Image 1 (cartoon, rainbow over the protein chains, first blue to last red):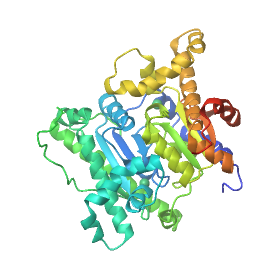
Image 2 (image 1 turned 90 degrees about the horizontal axis):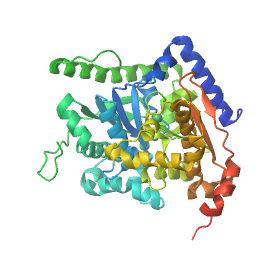
Image 3 (image 1 turned 135 degrees about the horizontal axis):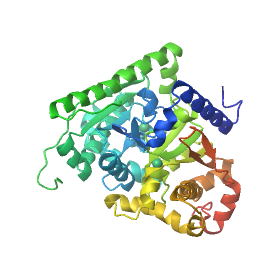
Image 4 (image 1 turned 90 degrees about the vertical axis):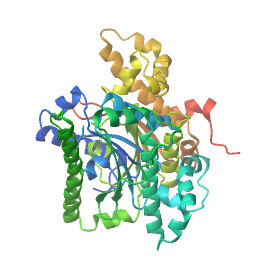
Amino acid sequence: MSSSILDAIDRIVAGNRVYAQQTSEQDPNAFKEWNKGQSPEVLWIGCADSRVPETTVCNCKPGEIFVHRNIANCVPADDISSASVVEYAVTHLKVKKVVVCGHTKCGGANAALADADLGQTLNTWLHPVRELRRKHKTELDKLPDDDARSLRVAELNVQQSLEVLRLHPAVKRAINERGLSLHGMIYDIGAGQLRLLEASGVKKTNGLWSPN
Amino acid sequence: MSGEPPSNPKEVRKYLQQSHDRIFESNRKWASEQKAKHPEFFEKLAQGQSPDYLWIGCSDSRIPAEAVTGLEPGEMFIHRNIANLVCNTDLNVMSVVNYAVRHLQVKHIIVCGHYGCGGVKAAMTPKDMGILNPWLRNIRDVYRLHEAELDDIPGDNDKKYDRLVELNVIEQARNVIKTAAVQQSYEEKGFPVVHGWVFGFNDGLLKDLNINFEGELEKIKKIFDLTKTE
Ligand SMILES: [Zn+2]
Ligand SMILES: [Zn+2]
């Protein structure tokens, strides 16, 4: 079914009918169960990129993954949207894992490596990613090509988001009290595979700010 | 990923490891099935994305946008936050709208809420929610804008709650229409068109709130016209 034949909106309305029908055929109680509430184990913070739909690539069912997706899976310390998602997921839903997932061929990482003016909105949002490029210039310059540099920036950006998350008071509390764990991942778009990042970059607190 | 979690620390660690491994196992299974079905699937995706749709939905785990619309990876750009809000001062959502409209040139923007939304419910509850207060304030403001209609709804709170979910979607869709990116692109190219939908768990169906995009655009222009640049 190509979108040139069917109107784009008719197409997803039809797609939704198929989804509703198939879901209740496979499990007649599915919607009744979901109607009662949600208890996801995982909070996924990922890129808005259309090629990384979390529930599909993890082969999970609806109800399993609570989701925040934005440009380049950033978690700026002063961002109220992601902070609210984290608070709701960790304190109220009591998820057990928080995953930050970056990916290869990320438009945000590529933009951060280039010098194009993306307009004030995107320039501001991507500023922390561009800062990574500046901070890690020596390492990035040694890499063989743009794809490798883009991947490395995506990895560093995941680590940066994890560092902000570790300082979120709800996260800190949940780590201590009930073993909440944080994980960095990279999704390889060309292979369809997830890769776990080593838990590196965990900085010891230096006495400046340590919520407990 | 369901079942009773264990309680002693050693067991918990093992259990967490298992649910962790399961994500990777499931992912590998999905990737190899996908490759078997369409051998060039991933190579094609690696070349770039050109989605027709931007979806602005709730973070709620029960509504994975691509699954409930039957779309394949690569077809829908997705932003999800608590209660599918589009706040004008939120750089997070604004950069998504900006990128989707100006760079990806999406044809449709769908703001999708859902009945039974925990965010909307929390906003209807008069309670201090800490750091969530500023975010939920935006939903409380939707209530204030439509106070007369909502307070006129007879019977239990459930109907009022459902209606606030719908009104919230309509207001957030309006907020998308108020952006310079959408107004300028529509004037120049005739897209994107903004839609407001609600997902229901009773039947798994999407309900179109039939927002009249052109009519709304005209209405907001008196105050919010941003088509002229400096
Ligand atoms: Zn990306
Ligand atoms: Zn919700």
